[in-house]
Structures are given as structure tokens and as C-alpha cells.
Amino acid sequence: MDTPTTWIKDVELFTPDGRHRGDCLIKNGRIAQLGDVDGSGSDEVVEGNGRWLFPGIIDAHVHFRTPGLTHKEDWTTASAAAVAGGVTTAFDMPNVDPATITPQSLDDKRDLVGEQTRCNFGFFYGATADNTDSYDTVDGVCALKIFMAMSTGNLLVDKEEDLRRVFGAWDGQISVHAENQARLDARREEFKDRTDTAVHSEIRDPKAAADAIRLAGELAIEFGRQVHVLHTSTGAEMEALAEVREAADQADTDARITAEVCPHHLVMSTEMYDKWGNYAKVNPPVRPPEEQARMWQALHDGDVQMMATDHAPHRPEEKEQPYWKAPSGMPGVQTLLPVMLDAAHRDKCSPEQVVEWLCHGPTEIYGIEERGRLEEGNWADLTLIDPEMTREVTDADQFSRCGWTPLRGRTLSGWPTETWVNGRLAYRREDKGQGVVRADEGTGREVDFR
Image 1 (tube, rainbow, N blue to C red):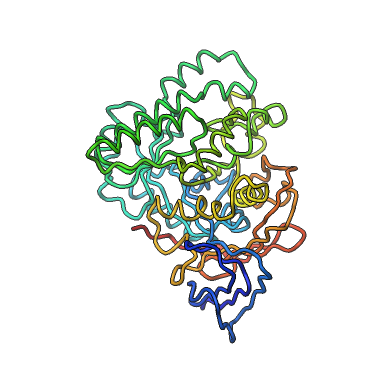
Image 2 (tube, rainbow, N blue to C red; image 1 turned 120 degrees about the horizontal axis):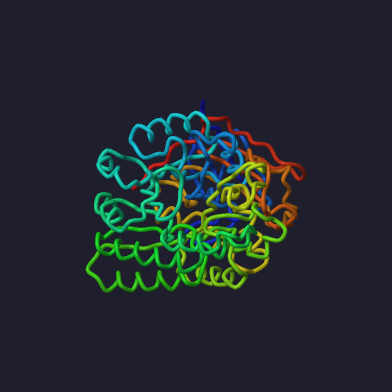
């Protein structure tokens, strides 16, 4: 099917060179022209009326649950939520069933996702203590994912000798869930008689995360690896990152250590537990309000280079189990951009910084080709934004199969109104209601990496 030629008129263009008023012309699925455009004869004309045109958002940390956990979510529902939130590319984690820890499981997952997805995609390959022999045969993934703390099946790699073997065998990008398993085990025993959800933030304390960052940093320096620390959430982690980065600068090494923060660690805190209970249970946990301020500062200082959601939906009946049985995780892919647009509206950051953290940062860290930047010749992954639209977040608006959001009841200013994936209109929001997902299943592409 041919990709329509689309003329998006009179918008604020958020390019790597800054913010400019102009037009965007889409041809053959790519950005053909930006600026003063003659789009006469286009198949579709979109009147921007001064709205903002961003590159499509890249959520480089999601759990879309295919295969094996599809009662919670799959790529059909999750990618619908993604494009409704302006997200055009998502990178999926390996802790599914079967886990993505062999070349065959990776190929099988590619086949499944390719048939379902409405957004573009990439995959993490999962590290185990005994799958290093397969690394040389793995190609086209965004990174190796190491769970240094509790996860699904045999994906836990917490012993230093196993970590050293994994770091030595994988010579590409490494992303780590950095928490110290031994400390978590000790604290679970210490707090075993507690049944309130608030204990979650005490068990998984900042020291557990900071200690794991120091170890991951030491291994990055020893082996000269590029290591990305997922979902940082505390000042203690920022101190640990500063230490390992300074050590890397002083060493003769190619090591690079980057980090991300999730939106829930910027706008949610331990104050949520009284109202939300296990719905607020997530790993790493929500933190006290002062840690929110510290993570905002880390973004502004450049200590954290990007954002991602860790979208990890569970059904309400799973979340409503007693604390020790309830799973950790919450949905977020559909609300990532609205949360950050609202932050810009409230002067906590600028819209240019939103583009940097949600588009340019992931593109640079993961080496994504031809996406994530509003540049001529790149794929036309785009989201058009009404910065003045104010809406209340509701469960009824969510496309995720789980059917709920921890942001329910919040009023946010700034919403995506249209999303294009590879030049095709994937989503359009009307003034009222949920909006309409236009993309068919299977229309997303697997992204390429440098």
C-alpha cells in the first residue's frame, strides 16, 4: 500500500537546531521537507494552526507482555496506547514467557510482534548466568538487559562472577536494572511481618540501587562497555553515578555510563500508598517527595539523559491481591508525553527539553537510525500537539488491556492530537472522547541501529 503524501501546515517545528515556525511535507513515509513548503497536490492537508510538531516519542523501556503474558497486555493493545500517547517506537524487555534469552526466542518474538504492532519496535536480549555462548549470534537488538535484582524465571544475574562473564562476552550496549539482590533479600526478611504496601519503598531502598550502580560502573570501566542504568529514582543513585563517571574519565577506557528516569518517579511519591495501595507498587518503588525534586534536578543538570516509562501493566485482580503476592508495575506509555507536556506547562521544564529527553536522548544512547529527530530524510514518525488542550485523565480513555492508570483524576495541559508512524496517520484525537487509532495491526517496523 502506498504511503500518502501529507502536508502539515503552520506548526512549530521542534528540530535539533531549535524551534521554527513552518510546514512539514511527508512523502514515501519520510520527512521530505521542513520549513517553507509547497504541498499542493498532497493527498492530505493538516491545518496545524500553530500547534507543536515533535518527532515521534521513543519509549525505550516497556513490557508489552508478548508472548506468554497476554492476559495483561499484548502488542495490539499496547501499541494502540503508544500511538494514542504520541509514542511511535517502543523497545520491549525480555522477561516474557518464554524469555527472550535465545536466538530462537528472539526470532519467534519478532514474528509475533511484527504481526500485531501499530508502532515501531526494538527488542532487548536477556542475560542469564549461562547464555553467554549465544551472544555472538544475536543481531539487531537495542541492548543486552541485565536484571541485577529479582525478575522472572532465570533472568536474575546477581553474582559478581556471573556479571563479569556477561560483561566480558557482550561487546554492545548494556542496560541494567541496578539493585543489589543480597540487600533486597536481607530487607525482605527484616520487614517480613509488614503487610502494608508502603513497606515496598523501605525494602527496595536507595542503598540497594546505589550499590548496584557502583558495581555495574566498575564492570563498565573494566571491560570498556556502554552501560545504561534504567529507572533511576534517588539522589543516592546520582551520587553513585557521579563516582563511576569520574572513575571512567580517569581511566583509559571506552566506558560510557548513562541513565534514565521514569515519569512516575517525577510525579508520584510515597504519598500515593494511602489511596492506591498495590496499584502504586512498582520496581524501583515510588520515593518520598524530596527524591522527586532531586530527579528533576538530575534531568536539568544532565546527570540523567533520557526518560522511559517501564510500562508494565497488570490486571486489577492481580493488583488487588495482598501486598506480598501483588505484582509490581504500572502502565504508562499512553501518558508519558501528556505528563511531560503538563510539566512544561507548569514551567518545570521547557518543551525543547521534553523533546531532548523523550526523543533525542534515546536516539543517541541506543544509536537509533533515521528516527527520533525532526530532520529531512528521516522516517516520518511524528506527533502533533495541542499545548493548550486540558483534559482529565480517565481509565475509560486508556487503550491498554489492563484498563487503568495511576494518573486517573489528574488534569493535564498539553496533549497529542495526531500521530504518524512511518508517514501514516496512526492516531487522531477529537476534542472529546478517547480518540481513534487509525493504524492497522502489523504496520510498525523494526528499527535499525548504528
